[in-house]
Amino acid sequence: MNSRIKIFFVNLKCLLVFKKHRVSSLGNIFKVIDKYDHIYLARLNRHNRYKKGIFYGVNILAEQYSLDKITNLENGILIDCGANIGELGFWAKKKNINYIGFEPESNEFKCLSLNAGENNRVENVALWNKNEKLKINSLPCSGDSSIFDVPESTTSFEIDGRRLDKLIDSFDTDGPRIFKVEAEGAEPEVLEGAKYILKDIDFITVDCGPERGINQEYTFIAVNNFMLENNFSLVVAKFERVTMLYKNNLRDTEKYLNIDNC
Image (cartoon, rainbow, N blue to C red):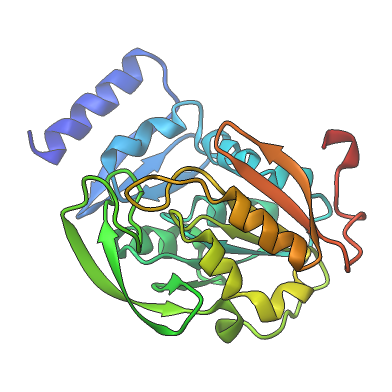
């Protein structure tokens, strides 16, 4: 079934069951609209995330990473490792904070560029602990592409791997500085590649779920040890997706934390 027919039936179903969104095709990407917003997708099968509205769906992702626990976002910045299509870039626009997104998959990066907006920075690279070429085992349909061997991946591509602290050496912002890390099992390496700017970051939120290599190992122990060694402490742990929010003990982070909601 071609994409135009699929989209026809998707929109018909949305109409019949009173879902808030509709879908259209733009070549090899898709556009989802509701009454108030629009967002670009790399895969049609992800449209249902927005059945209750685009911002509603995006906000669920932000809450999974405990971004709702951080307040006073004005003039802040969100650095997004593993940005995928840039849902958190869309969220950052809504919150009026600066955004930098990194995504290695080309089609997802195309959507990221559109969803993040013109005034934000996005790069088609993979964050890593060295500046070197990397082979990515591609599994874009599920968003699980990884530098490590992954089940079911049959294709791969080369991409530039970059240390974050070589891409960013200072922050021109007075608001909270947030680093979100989702690297399909490479979270310890990504954090190591940010080591020399960690002192200037207020919060780090990390997906520590079972995604490392063929054995699908959790990365929480390695991540937590690294964070403690670098003067961060755990603020919020969520076990449905296994995401952890850390705060920098050497910075004045309390003015940004919604303590009553933690």
